[in-house]
Image (cartoon, rainbow, N blue to C red; front, top):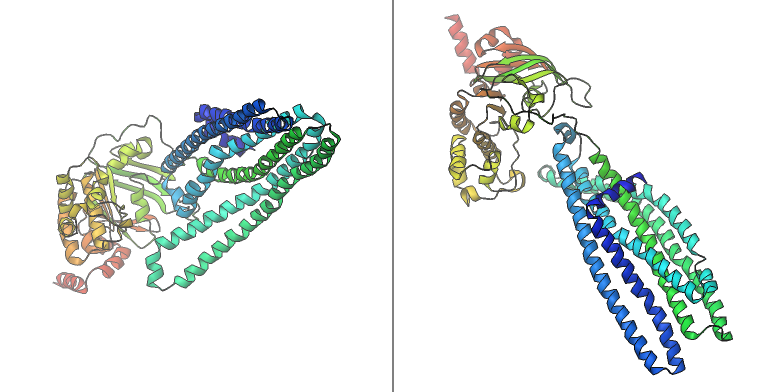
Length: 585
């Protein structure tokens, strides 16, 4: 019930629209209820031969039908507007909340699960709030107005006709109590199915490369089967309760046919009155059946609402002060003081008591084995994660105390697997600075050695890149990502194995460009190629999240066994041979 009440809060901005919808629904039902009464009177007028009265009654029936049409059209327009408004607000709120959550949240979530909540679950909530409530209200209005009309005609017959209503309420309550958990499980399994479909589409290259289509089909079929099985549980409940809700009013109908028919035969009830009464009773059957379906819709909406609120109630773990100032002016000095980092759910820290002071304008290479904490360290600079202990300072300011948007405008990151949007080359590069001119975009591309291949594309900078940039090679994507970072003109540049997908010749071209870009700019380079590490002024060696050595290439070769091992795997043999000869000489 708590979830249901929270769902109703989304209607607050549309209170007037909801009120108008209910008023129009009530008016339409009032016109509907008037028609059987007028019809019964017309039948009696026909039996009495009153032609003038019959004409007026026929006109009144037509007028009531037109009024019902007008009110129904108005109600649908207003409720449709409310429904779309609720959907718009929900989408905006959900997306804004997702944007406010820290990166660690997305590390632990399946994309398909999140997509299911903002699509399937949202649609269930939107339909019920926009239409379901009105349908329920309309059904209630119909039952009330038809009941009043029947009591005005014959109170004793009305009591007999409405006798099944309490049983309808009891059955509907039982249905709701059993359907809610069943529907909630259906929504969860649909989310798992969506996640499996999204993963399969995203990984289609791997699937094709290893010819695992049949295996993926089997896994997907398993998920489909789970959805089918749980949907059948919900369907069986619906299949039993919904017809039962429609059956109960028929008991009243049978009683009225028997009792009312006897009164007509005895002459105590006119044929017109009996016809009107019979029409009212038929009018009750549809709304009672509608209540059954709408209660099912309410259960689906409540189950979906619970999943949506589970997401909305997830508070951002990364605290941002309301009055956070921008990053103070400076040249990019970086300090890490006693920094440790443990990812949520991890058993071991990714970083342990890191102390590092990087003067402004320095290029630092971070090396180490896979899993040693290199990417974790540089991820702290733009505050993609918060240090578990210690502090990260840029130009004297703790990154947790400044506006993260201003901070990230000053720290540009290029990863080994850059993400490109399904947009033009120009738009992907200009993503860092949407107000950049075409000349600035092209200059950044030239500095990243991307201009040459871009101009060879079908429409040059206006060529549309496929989803995730898969229409480009890995090296081309990396160069566009480097251009994007250069266009941002950041105070600090982070290159996380940013040239891993380019050939040796292109790598040398990019390095020449990077030498120009890195001059006077604080740069962190993560690389496995020593040719890239050679760009650094200082090298930091990480092992199991700790700094085990620090210095320049030559000193580390002499003092660090781990660095020597890394270097031996990264340098050609002849380089070591030359160095050995020089040492002998």
